[in-house]
Image (cartoon, rainbow, N blue to C red; front, side):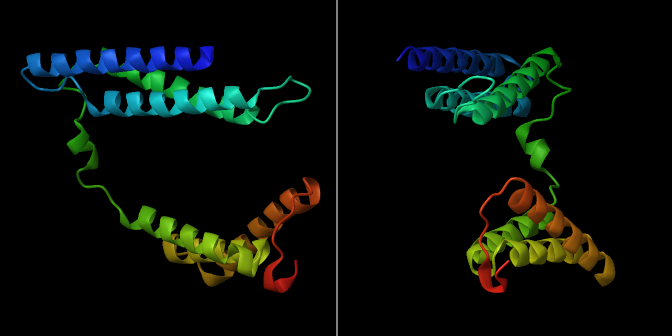
Length: 185
């Protein structure tokens, strides 16, 4: 229960800071009080704080026997730390030096990220049917051919090597269960 109280006071402090920044924006002739860096930093602080609270409630365990929340605790701590650094850096910058949120998205190239997202979605959809090895090989091959424009020979070699490495690491070294799919491997 104390964790939730700490988290709610953390959220309260963030909302007070957002209110202060919004008030500064109204006073500022440039209207840059609430810039893109601060908005994104506050967002990631909230996401990281929420994940941090959840991972603590799962239990951190000990150094010899980490609990189920240990890795998510480390990851969310890193997210909070990076967001805090970005937030503090944004306070030091002059308003004219920091681009606005609209400036950050102007001229964004969406083709490659959209293609990677769609290929990854396709990978997720066929993962259980084709199995880990074939689905991963196909994903790597398509990414290397379509987005990196590698020659067929290199795309095949790199796809086979990376799939073999991942299969060896996950299945053989870590003994993780992976879907076998239609090839049975």
